[in-house]
Image (cartoon, rainbow, N blue to C red; front, side, top):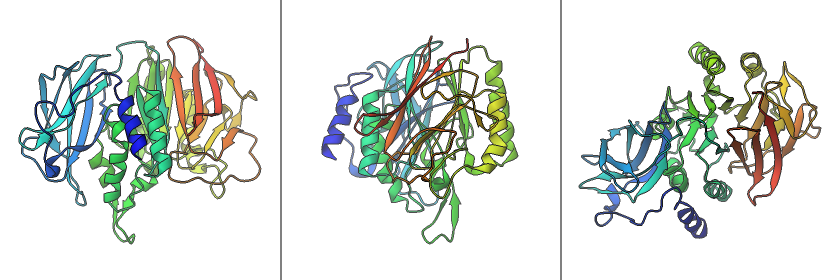
Length: 405
């Protein structure tokens, strides 16, 4: 644990080298010390960053101090974002009016209660720029989960996608604290774009009182409806879907409208969906999700979604490009944009691993029972390149999608 934390701190000299631990004075008292920092893009990733954190006890004037480079001359007050079963005071703030493609430093806290150390983030570019993002779902707070988080830090992505099943608190809310603390080296500087899974749809211990997404919605500041949303980065549009409640007409209408708008937008070259439940899979006892295939496959086909990243099944699994429920290519590595949608299960985040059915389905290109992460490079020109990597950095899978235009 100590070695991983030290490595995380060293990596976080990117994107800005910071020399102060608790600038302008001693650190805060334990009861008012900010912890569990996490950032996420707002609706406009070029101009807005959302910041959330927790203190054991409430403070009077929670704020974010921030600015370009090391000059933190701006201040935004935070609001309380609590829920009935919280384990401390949760705060969130929206930093608006930011400049695109700019590094900001920030710290959170209270003038009396004290401030965090200084961290930094980078806003999205205002136009075309090559970038890398990472993804894994079904993480938890295991040693494998921490190693996956540390590997993402080494990757230095523009942001990280987590397609559901985060803390596995399952109604024990101190587990959220453990999970958020484990991931803080990542989430304080890399926008953490999560959507809920079935384990975010919580009940209190004993299963007698459902509380739904209360903890997820309070503990994360996210854009849009928070459980589902979209954001742009470079030439790509990312669409986060709440598949636990996909049958809701409002979200289905939003999903189709969002996909349609992306395909009308000349600035959007790549269309990527991330969600918890996969449409297709071959883990033992699960397999394909007929309801999602009925609801989503026609939309993904109609609007030619390039890539769908899912979790739920605790494995790595990728299908061949699909149209109309059938594979449209036999290549293991090279594909043409628009010919078919690539479906990836990146569920090896850390909590546990599942077994596959013995016979690999014909539509499945690659599958492996392994803890892993997905790393995707999105270029200005040329192919989108995706890699699935084990904890030791070795390669499970690599594929390319060559652009149609």
